[in-house]
Length: 152
Image (cartoon, rainbow, N blue to C red; front, side):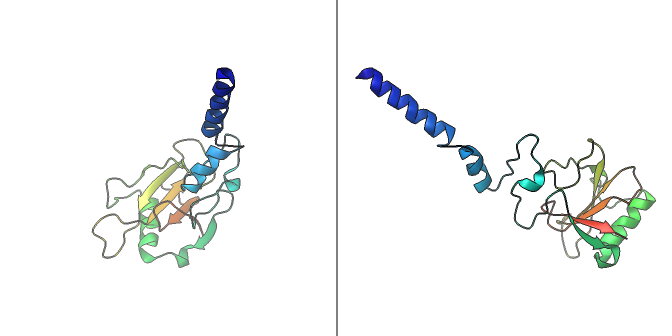
């Protein structure tokens, strides 16, 4: 009798800890709003935060569609500064994999001023490649939740 009870307890405990089925703990993580990409799984197959773009196809935006402050930030990037904030030009790690994959150090982030904001605000431009290059840049107005690829 004790062995049957112990076996039942172990079985129940493993079901609870295992998430009661395939992907149970992964589903709980996804429901909490976190990205749960498995190694080797494409980011476009994983759920992303509301409004976020999968890494395979960010929406495009032309320079003419950008706010004036973003156009000014692009001008500063091409000129190599000076930038209004000391944090401008720092490494952007792309840890959520919303942008195309590149080696660490490829992307850098820059502040886009927000009129009336007392801090840096939510708007940024992230550019890849050599500094002072704006050929591979992305705009976000929601602090890295979603991106739009900047086109000519």
